[in-house]
Length: 262
Image 1 (tube, rainbow, N blue to C red):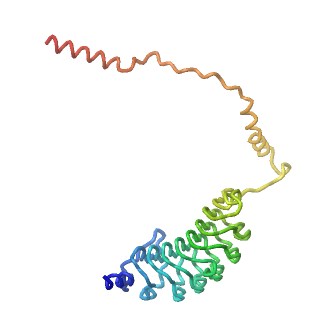
Image 2 (cartoon, rainbow, N blue to C red; image 1 turned 180 degrees about the vertical axis):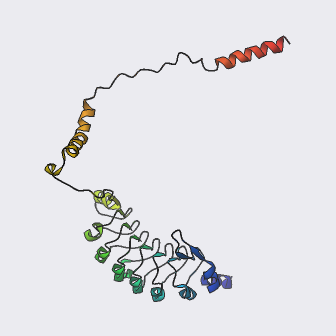
């Protein structure tokens, strides 16, 4: 019994051969090392020999720690570590300058164990920190100017720094199910999606006559719709159509007569 339990704690051993057979080609032609859902408990050192991959998926394992040697994956653009047991991230993660996607959702990360070096990931577009133990968000994340999607749901946050909420390229911010003190503000934080792009304000004098008329028509359209008197609806009539199932009834009567008078 004890031996079986100890063996289970070691997890699956990943060899270089297994790792090589787990390389896939992603949709854009990159090389993806997929070691997800394999019962891994410790970071497999052998994969450092495959550090030229573009994507690394170690999600849905039992990893508690990512070593500093992750910095050898300098080509890495996509890193998925979700659904492990990570309690901290190494400072070396900040050296992955090509990273545009980082998923560390569903782990045991605390704010103190989030390395400040995350702010060095200048090309990061998608960051998922949901389902962790974060009680605050470092203002240093405001340096991620290329960030488009940020997930902070299911943490212990009471506020989000303004410089993070107002990142210039941020289109989606999901912070649902956090204990924000004001329920109204919580809704504003929870699912903030910026969906207006390329909006420019100009003065009327700068518009040509046709553009000005089009804008005025659009502006007046709601008022015109209010003043329209609804017409009484007419029930549609179909005089040429047979009564439902009338032909079927007629045919049935003919067959009955034929059966009685062969």
